[in-house]
Image 1 (spheres, rainbow, N blue to C red):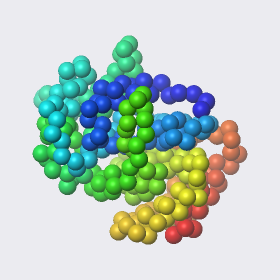
Image 2: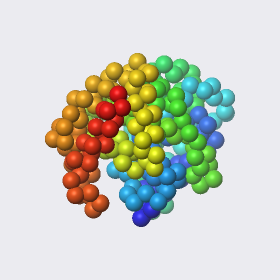
Image 3: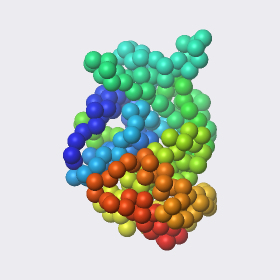
Image 4: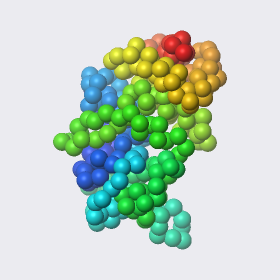
Amino acid sequence: MSNTYPGEKLLVKVINDLADFLPYLVLVGGWVPYVYAKYIWKNVPNLAVTTTDIDFGVSSKDYEGKESIASCVRRLGYGEHHVSMDRLIPFVPVVKDATGSIKAEVEFIADPRVSKNIRQDLVGREIKVNEIENFNILLESVIITTINKHKIQIPTESMFVFHKLLTFVQRENKEKLKKDLYYVYYMLRFCPEKENLVNSVGLLIKDKQEGKSVKRNIRKYFSSADSQGPILIEQESGPDEYIDDLRQDIFARFNKLRGSL
């Protein structure tokens, strides 16, 4: 590993602060490839971090703790980003380093089918919980890794890739769409067991009802090296010191995925 992303200190802080809640949360979003690269794969030359925000998926497990996450972060002095200018709730917690120079929003996401009681008991009524259709798929298959002596759940490699390929088209923000595709490329490129990953994603596409949408998205965005997908990922990645023709490499890796269908 060549370096450590400065924002990681915030991730570690949040994991420490929310230790009691981690069995009910799954780390999702842009930090997932980073965690794989640094804590699971190891010795990967690049880090896939183009975000500072920290996203957690809310599982459907019943929570019987006495304190909510909202109560916890307020007790610990987290900042608050208020969703509405004229109301104190709901808010998005904001974590800062000791100097206050680095900060990140801590967001919580749930499938619409997760009951409001679970969300309110665990996260709290005060914190905004984003709802995303088909989000439960991402939480179906997780692994546990350890960061700073705390066990955290993250999606399996194949489920992370599958879910990104399913949902990136829903992004209204083009920059976030590019990041989603870049994360998929990063996983396909740096995963130590690339063939197993491609085969596992292919099986998910074949076995799951949502696989038809994933297949359609791949064919639409990755029909050639000059298709929209490779171009967007190349823009997000920037110059690559290891590969001369980055766009062709992107297409080749997604084409292997197409070939497995």
